[in-house]
Image 1 (cartoon, one colour):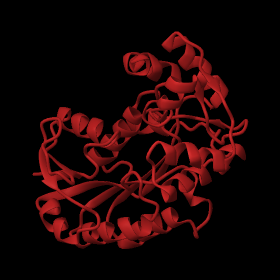
Image 2 (cartoon, helix red, strand yellow):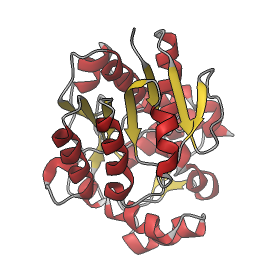
Image 3 (cartoon, one colour):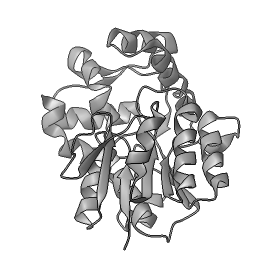
Image 4 (cartoon, helix red, strand yellow):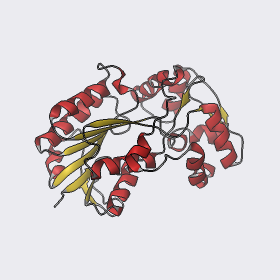
Amino acid sequence: MAGKILVLGASGHVGRPLVKELLERGETVKAASRSGAAIEGADGVAFAFDRPETYAAAFEGVDRAYVLLPGGVTTPREWLIPVIEAAAARKVKVVLQTALGVDADDSIPYRQVELALIASGTPYVILRPNWFTDNFLNFWKPGIDHAGAIAVPAGEGKSSFIDGRDIAASAASALTTDAFDNKAFNLTGPEALSYAEAAAILAQVIGKPVAYAPVDDDTFVGILTGAGVGEDYARFLASIFYPVREGWTAGVTDAVKTLTGKEPRSVAQWAQDHAAALRS
């Protein structure tokens, strides 16, 4: 009989829909979070990356795990490699979420996490999503509400934004079959859009003007820290807009369809589905 699936970050934007999808597929899920609360009907388990004493209980009875970095963390090696080592020691298959482009250079910390997983000997799947469409709600909505603008240092760069639900569906497939084992997938939405194009789509759905306001890194950091984001994480977020400006996030792949059998959702579809939250 198959063991349980451990989902780290189960209360997050990917974790929550992933838990729901796995339960719908008939899997037994342990939903890990700092609080250990039950999530979407799955049993909760208390887990903290920086508290190794929580690992054993989380991994008990588990044969597959979804591993991703918590938001606000800028040191992926220190946080993720100990968890990967704990999984590998128990022969737990790891589906690891990193980020598009981290395999460009082996000196990138996220790539070092991927290499540690590959070298661990445990079965794995690596998912590298592009920028989340959900960021328009989770990060950029205050600017839309207060200034009618999305102020980010993206220049004229385009991104093939991906819906968090499509990341979750891709993860569910990777966790419930061995057909994709020991492979990596670059996850994107169906089209590459500039922030100005995305703003125009949001404006149609919200029913009021939304502009794109390109800013420099320091201005962007100031906006984020003013909204309560830590300085280190704000600088990290600014730094990852460099690949956007350079055009490196504009590629489109068929990975979501390969993994799920379905086309990924467009920004327009995402906006329609989240219209009430965008307008509120």
